Image (cartoon, rainbow, N blue to C red; front, top):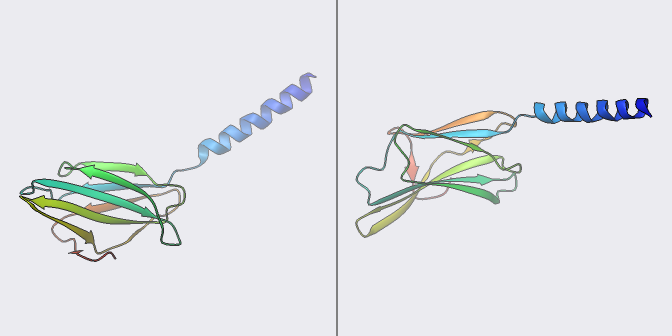
Length: 124
């Protein structure tokens, strides 16, 4: 009976060790552009799967300039597209960052919005 309990304990320990070694896929977003001048300003970090279907969206309302925001990607996500929603007075608009950010399993990718970022009205 002791041998069976010991074996079961070893199997559980091995399973826990293997599970704890799995690295999550993450991404870090930094807004170095800032939403100054806008009445309202939001960033949408849209996660897509391999088929191109949106699986999750993280929304940042008025993100702090220069602050890093780290997210764990949905397990089905393979790429990130970034959308900007802004309003100046009563005029609102939606723009897309014209780059697709591909996730690497178990790794972190960096997404930075700054003055060099290409922005357009169509989804990339």
